[in-house]
Length: 405
Image (cartoon, rainbow, N blue to C red; front, side, top):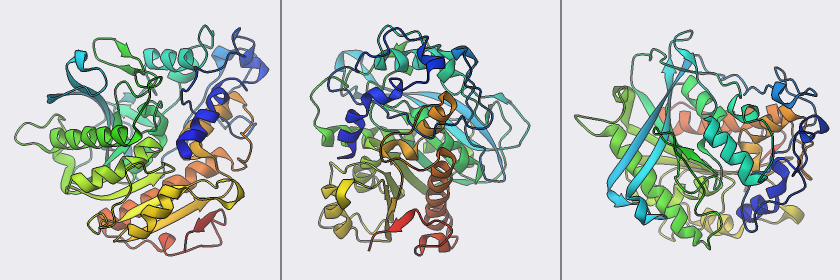
């Protein structure tokens, strides 16, 4: 259900751009490629603070919400190669290769500004949605982040959270959540699943396309492949004596969790089932193609957050899996949200002045705040052992958040 909704919203990325930006897009009315899934970038019509939706599209300036934790945020990019596994979607490409953004607690004021995404990935994203368009690359590549490259890491050991984005979405789609978790005292590994998104840029300058987008798909295979990607990333980050990341000493190998949006959220189930190192999981609005088995997931805690479906309907895979979860669990539905409310996309379209999609009434800042607080509270409880009354039940401060019985 949620993946189908992404497909339905394919044109919403740029087809509803305001005139100031649409004027630069000759092919604005062109539909997205048939069968493709695209992010529904739509939210409140007013630009967010710190943005400038002017008559010059190149002048549009978008910034992510400021992280809420006490730490500065550092970021480094890793290129990982799994020599023991051929690429599942393009075997001729050789071993599976992944790009991973590492976010970590850092000393504020050290390092330099980290770009949101590469020019190649930004261009690929725009061209995939609207072939031949002339929307400036810098509209996406130049989004203002709150992380820094070369930042000096904090001392100590921190839980690791692996983040997986939605299908078609580059890993940058959940940058805001990654930065916030790092500011709260987590190391975060944000994974690009190669050939499953509009464009992944590698160190040699190549930006690889979404090969899987226009192919028939067995979604359970996609989710299982992502689980293998995640386990490989954990392998490389925790291996001794030569981990893939120079600050791997920051990672507490006994406290590892996973969260994801859409297909990334769905992949948490096979990841929890196959990797004992992953202690807790979060699914943000992803249909579970791999159901929780009748035997459960080994008592591991699981958080599910979704947007309301029309007519009070519920995703069948969630209903089946919910009853089978055998550990701590919560199912939260956030009123006024749509499929992409749990990502950066509402903030991006705020900066472009794009109207929110039908059924979405929540402001982008509020959606970001709720996502960060509830996901952060879950990991604080499950990986740090800190009590979280926020997760005990409904509260008057967050009337949009409904707890499933």
